[in-house]
Image (cartoon, rainbow, N blue to C red):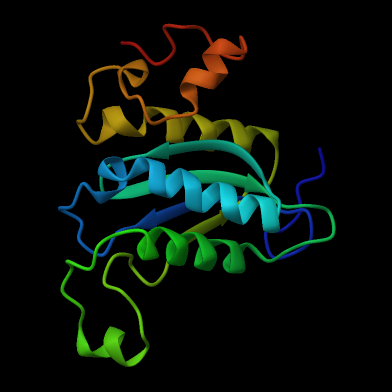
Length: 165
Protein backbone atom coordinates (compact mmCIF):
# COMPACT_ATOMS: atom_id res chain seq x y z
CA UNK A 1 0.00 0.00 0.00
CA UNK A 2 1.23 3.45 -0.90
CA UNK A 3 0.86 5.71 2.16
CA UNK A 4 0.85 9.29 1.03
CA UNK A 5 0.68 12.41 3.06
CA UNK A 6 -2.87 13.23 4.13
CA UNK A 7 -2.53 16.61 2.43
CA UNK A 8 -1.84 14.90 -0.89
CA UNK A 9 -4.33 13.03 -3.03
CA UNK A 10 -5.04 9.51 -1.83
CA UNK A 11 -3.73 10.14 1.69
CA UNK A 12 -4.61 8.06 4.75
CA UNK A 13 -5.14 10.00 7.94
CA UNK A 14 -6.12 9.45 11.59
CA UNK A 15 -8.37 12.11 13.14
CA UNK A 16 -9.51 13.10 16.60
CA UNK A 17 -12.54 15.41 16.56
CA UNK A 18 -13.89 16.83 19.83
CA UNK A 19 -17.06 18.52 20.99
CA UNK A 20 -16.63 21.95 22.54
CA UNK A 21 -18.26 20.68 25.74
CA UNK A 22 -16.02 17.82 26.84
CA UNK A 23 -18.61 16.82 29.49
CA UNK A 24 -21.31 16.29 26.88
CA UNK A 25 -22.74 13.02 25.58
CA UNK A 26 -24.09 14.62 22.42
CA UNK A 27 -22.34 12.30 19.97
CA UNK A 28 -23.80 9.07 21.36
CA UNK A 29 -27.20 10.65 22.06
CA UNK A 30 -27.40 11.81 18.46
CA UNK A 31 -25.50 9.00 16.78
CA UNK A 32 -28.01 8.69 13.93
CA UNK A 33 -27.58 12.39 13.11
CA UNK A 34 -23.81 11.88 12.99
CA UNK A 35 -24.22 8.82 10.73
CA UNK A 36 -26.54 10.77 8.45
CA UNK A 37 -24.10 13.70 8.22
CA UNK A 38 -21.19 11.36 7.44
CA UNK A 39 -23.17 9.38 4.87
CA UNK A 40 -24.33 12.55 3.12
CA UNK A 41 -20.78 13.88 2.92
CA UNK A 42 -19.36 10.52 1.77
CA UNK A 43 -21.88 10.42 -1.07
CA UNK A 44 -20.87 13.87 -2.32
CA UNK A 45 -17.17 13.67 -1.40
CA UNK A 46 -16.13 10.00 -1.21
CA UNK A 47 -13.61 8.61 1.23
CA UNK A 48 -12.97 5.17 2.63
CA UNK A 49 -13.63 4.82 6.36
CA UNK A 50 -11.03 2.36 7.65
CA UNK A 51 -11.85 2.56 11.37
CA UNK A 52 -13.90 4.69 13.75
CA UNK A 53 -15.09 4.94 17.31
CA UNK A 54 -17.67 7.41 18.59
CA UNK A 55 -17.47 8.30 22.28
CA UNK A 56 -19.82 10.69 24.10
CA UNK A 57 -17.73 13.82 23.52
CA UNK A 58 -15.19 12.93 20.83
CA UNK A 59 -14.51 10.54 17.99
CA UNK A 60 -11.54 8.99 16.26
CA UNK A 61 -11.50 7.95 12.62
CA UNK A 62 -9.13 6.81 9.91
CA UNK A 63 -9.94 7.81 6.36
CA UNK A 64 -8.37 7.10 3.01
CA UNK A 65 -9.11 9.74 0.41
CA UNK A 66 -9.56 9.03 -3.30
CA UNK A 67 -6.43 9.09 -5.45
CA UNK A 68 -7.39 12.44 -7.00
CA UNK A 69 -8.51 14.17 -3.79
CA UNK A 70 -6.74 15.65 -0.76
CA UNK A 71 -9.48 17.76 0.83
CA UNK A 72 -10.30 16.12 4.16
CA UNK A 73 -10.85 19.58 5.72
CA UNK A 74 -13.89 20.16 3.51
CA UNK A 75 -15.32 16.80 4.53
CA UNK A 76 -14.95 17.49 8.26
CA UNK A 77 -16.42 20.96 7.85
CA UNK A 78 -19.46 19.55 6.08
CA UNK A 79 -19.89 16.70 8.59
CA UNK A 80 -19.71 19.09 11.53
CA UNK A 81 -22.12 21.54 9.90
CA UNK A 82 -24.60 18.86 8.89
CA UNK A 83 -24.57 17.31 12.35
CA UNK A 84 -24.91 20.70 14.04
CA UNK A 85 -27.85 21.74 11.86
CA UNK A 86 -29.71 18.59 12.86
CA UNK A 87 -29.59 19.44 16.58
CA UNK A 88 -31.82 21.86 18.48
CA UNK A 89 -30.16 25.13 19.44
CA UNK A 90 -29.56 24.67 23.14
CA UNK A 91 -25.82 25.29 23.52
CA UNK A 92 -24.21 28.51 24.70
CA UNK A 93 -22.63 30.33 21.78
CA UNK A 94 -19.74 32.71 22.45
CA UNK A 95 -19.68 36.14 20.81
CA UNK A 96 -16.69 35.01 18.73
CA UNK A 97 -18.65 32.06 17.36
CA UNK A 98 -21.76 34.20 16.85
CA UNK A 99 -19.77 36.66 14.72
CA UNK A 100 -18.65 33.75 12.51
CA UNK A 101 -22.17 32.25 12.45
CA UNK A 102 -20.92 29.11 14.21
CA UNK A 103 -22.69 26.88 16.67
CA UNK A 104 -21.02 26.01 19.96
CA UNK A 105 -21.11 22.24 19.42
CA UNK A 106 -17.66 21.33 18.04
CA UNK A 107 -14.17 22.43 18.86
CA UNK A 108 -13.02 24.48 15.90
CA UNK A 109 -9.99 22.38 15.18
CA UNK A 110 -9.32 18.68 15.04
CA UNK A 111 -6.17 16.63 15.36
CA UNK A 112 -4.84 14.80 12.36
CA UNK A 113 -2.00 12.35 11.90
CA UNK A 114 -0.68 11.16 8.58
CA UNK A 115 -0.55 7.35 8.45
CA UNK A 116 2.96 6.47 7.31
CA UNK A 117 2.86 2.73 6.71
CA UNK A 118 1.04 -0.52 7.48
CA UNK A 119 2.43 -0.74 11.04
CA UNK A 120 1.33 2.84 11.77
CA UNK A 121 -2.12 2.03 10.37
CA UNK A 122 -2.48 -1.10 12.53
CA UNK A 123 -1.33 0.81 15.62
CA UNK A 124 -3.92 3.54 15.07
CA UNK A 125 -6.73 1.07 14.33
CA UNK A 126 -5.92 -0.69 17.62
CA UNK A 127 -5.87 2.69 19.39
CA UNK A 128 -9.33 3.51 18.00
CA UNK A 129 -10.81 0.17 18.98
CA UNK A 130 -9.34 0.20 22.49
CA UNK A 131 -10.21 3.84 23.19
CA UNK A 132 -13.52 3.22 25.05
CA UNK A 133 -11.62 1.06 27.57
CA UNK A 134 -8.87 3.66 27.89
CA UNK A 135 -11.46 6.30 28.78
CA UNK A 136 -13.21 4.03 31.27
CA UNK A 137 -16.50 3.67 29.40
CA UNK A 138 -16.28 -0.14 29.26
CA UNK A 139 -14.07 -2.93 30.56
CA UNK A 140 -13.62 -4.64 27.18
CA UNK A 141 -13.52 -3.11 23.69
CA UNK A 142 -16.34 -5.35 22.43
CA UNK A 143 -18.66 -3.88 25.06
CA UNK A 144 -18.66 -0.48 23.30
CA UNK A 145 -21.34 -0.47 20.58
CA UNK A 146 -20.16 2.58 18.59
CA UNK A 147 -17.00 1.14 17.06
CA UNK A 148 -15.89 -0.44 13.83
CA UNK A 149 -14.35 -3.18 15.98
CA UNK A 150 -17.60 -5.11 15.56
CA UNK A 151 -17.25 -5.07 11.76
CA UNK A 152 -13.62 -6.20 12.08
CA UNK A 153 -14.80 -9.15 14.19
CA UNK A 154 -17.63 -10.00 11.76
CA UNK A 155 -15.21 -9.98 8.83
CA UNK A 156 -12.73 -12.19 10.72
CA UNK A 157 -10.00 -9.53 10.79
CA UNK A 158 -9.68 -9.80 14.59
CA UNK A 159 -10.86 -12.38 17.11
CA UNK A 160 -14.07 -11.87 19.07
CA UNK A 161 -12.05 -11.54 22.28
CA UNK A 162 -9.72 -8.85 20.86
CA UNK A 163 -8.40 -6.47 23.51
CA UNK A 164 -9.56 -8.44 26.55
CA UNK A 165 -7.15 -8.60 29.43
